[in-house]
Amino acid sequence: MKQHHDFAEASLSVTAPTVSIITPCFNAEHTLKKTVDSVLAQSFQEWELLLIDDRSTDNTYDVALKLARTDSRIKVLQLANNGGAAKARNHGIEHATGQFIAFIDADDQWETEKLSTQIKWMIEQQCPLSYTAYSRSTPEGALINWVGVPKKINYRELLKTNYIGCSTAIYDSKAIGKVYMPDIRRRQDYGLWLRILKLIPEARGINTPLTDYLVHDQSLSSNKKVSASYNWKIYRQIEGLSLLTSAYYFFQYAIRGILRTKAPGLSTKLGLLHTTDKKIQPKGPPGSSRKA
Image (tube, rainbow, N blue to C red; front, side, top):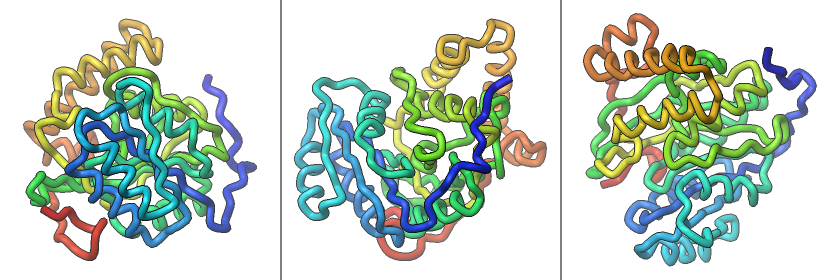
C-alpha cells in the first residue's frame, strides 16, 4: 500500500503564496511572446516565470532575454546542451523559489484568472496537485473545442489515461516537496503526475477551461504512435509494472484513444472520457483567447 502524506496537517499559506511558472523553450521564437503575455496578464501577480531555453537553433533565447528585460519576475535559464523538455522542466523546478510550481508550454496561453482561480481553490481544498479543463485552438486562432476533466483522479485511474494537461497543472512544493519529471523525451509530465499520486491520495480538477492549447503538426502529442510507445515505457520502465498489469493499463489507454477519435459522444456518456465538442467564444484581453 502506498504511503500518503497527511495533508490535513500540511500548511498552505493564505497570504499571497508565490508561484514558480516553468516554461521549456525550444525553437519557439514565434509563439513565446504570446505565452508570456498571457502570464503577464494574470490577475494573480505573485509569480516568477522561468524560461528555460533548450539550446534552440532559432532566436528563441534572444526573444526570451528581451522579454526578461521588460519584467524582473521573468528569468531566463539555458541548458548547456539540448536535453529535451524533461531536462528543461527539471532545471526549472530545481531553480524554482515559489511554493506552487506551475507549467506552461511556450506555445500555450492562460486565461487571465487562471492562477487566481486555481491557487485560491487549492488553498481552500488543501489540494497539493490540481489541473483544469482546457481549450484547443489552431495556429490561426480558431477554437476547435475544449477538453473537460474529472473532479478527482487517483494513481490507478491515471494509469488508464492521462487526464492532466501539463500547461494546466500546479503542485504545492511546500506540501509534498519538489518532485521531478522522469528523464524521457516524451510523456514526462505523465510520469510526474504518477509520481506525485504515489505521495497523495488524489489530484483534483477544475472543469473550467483556463488554458488554451495550440494544436499543430509539430506538437509532440500529435504523434499517437510515439505517444503510445512512451506510455508503455512509463508502465514498464518508470512505474515498474508487471507485463500483465502493463498490458491491462495499456488496453485501457488504447480503448480510450479509439473512443476519443471514433465515438466521443458515447465515451463521454460512459464516463470513460471527459472530452467535449462544446465551443468557447473568444473573450477578454490577452490570455483569455488566442490571437491569430
